[in-house]
Length: 435
Image (cartoon, rainbow, N blue to C red; front, side, top):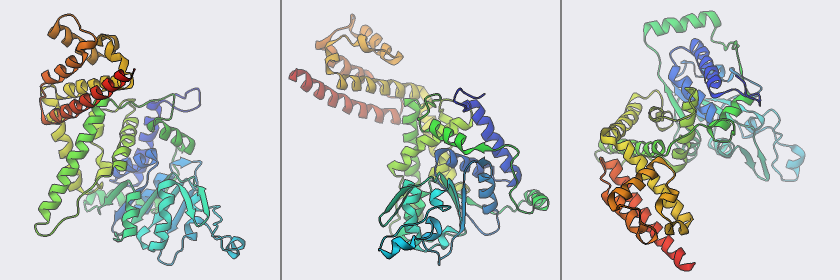
């Protein structure tokens, strides 16, 4: 069902994406997880790196994915060491070059394309790869005096190997999604691949139903919270849970690295705050794929799409272990309920910090949520009739004193909220004395 603006509902978008994924899966056999990961990359406007040995269909997969969309230009290139940046950005303007200015004619280049497919990306020289960094990350061509915006939405790059250098490490950071495609040795899978080859000769085929690029942009606006008509909610509890899972996964990866290197020092596995923040877009993309307007706990279990390499079972198993460990801990003995209570109490403290004069009012006057109303009931049970300004500080402190965490994750959160309480009380007292 289309909305008044011509865009579709979340349920209709989910149905279109599922149909697209199913069609791609019919053409590229046994790659369902990588296909879902690629669709998430498109929804989040991020880039995907495909790594495998030769002949496993990386190019077919990338081109069949892009073939599902219309109204967008696809830039294709086979990287090589002889290429210069103008291969990607367009030829140099010779008249400008005579005056010492490097200006690219960007028409038809990667800069003016919505999609890009770079085959054997690590065959490119470091000079060219370095020039690509700002285009991939900031969506701008920045070379010499030329600084222009790019229409680039998503690049899928393919490689048979990883080449390690300072530049390639920076390049890898631009690819939020990574997949390792292992050859299929199962005879029945090989049979199905052979069937497809006999029918289509390894070529992409037109989709019976395409998704417009404008609709893809609409989907991206939904998951980044920029669409007024559709909102995919992430509760405070799920948000906190997500960050605890990510931190535990980082701990497990580092422990495994250190155990593997008995002598010497292993380079730490590190998840940057930028990547952790982008996990929120992926969560909303995963909910959108399921036709939901709210992120649930199970969506967090799929964040290995960006924190691990799809196709590497050990990395995925480590993330799933981190998820399950934290989930089990918080599920036992009302852990999630306690997280919700503490987070809502933290929001109450934020209200006090923003409006210090609230401290002079009975607390029930701004207890607007269920948790805050429970807080008021606790006050009445503990102290009888609710007290006002002189006692509010003691009431807030006593509530946390009486709060008994049921697990380590809640205990750590309680300590953080206790620190916030003391900081808030100091700030409120300072502000009230100033009035």
